[in-house]
Image (cartoon, rainbow, N blue to C red; front, top):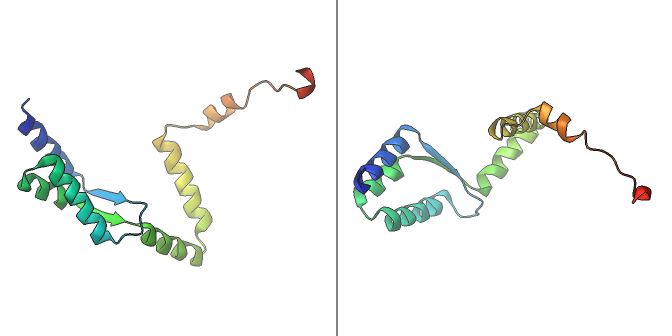
Length: 115
C-alpha cells in the first residue's frame, strides 16, 4: 500500500471516530489545538490532510476543564459514583478481573523472622 493510501486510510478512520484529547496542561484549549495542528503540519506536510485530521478533533480537555468537572461532581454528591465508574472502566480497559486479584493475593507470606 502506498504511503498516500496509508495516510488517507488513517485520516478516514480518524474522521469516523472523533478524537478527544485530555492534556495535562494549563494552556487554553485554543493554544493546545494550535500545538496539535503544528505537530500535524510537521508530520503530514499536506494542508488538506492536516485539515481533515484537525476536523476530527472533537474536544480538548485541559487541567482547568478537569478541575471544573471535578468541582461539579463533588458539589452534586456524586464523587463515589464517579470514582466507582472510573475504577470499573479502568478494569475493562486493562482487561482486569477480580479473579486476577484473587490469584495475586495468594502469594505465600514470609515472616521476616524466617529470613
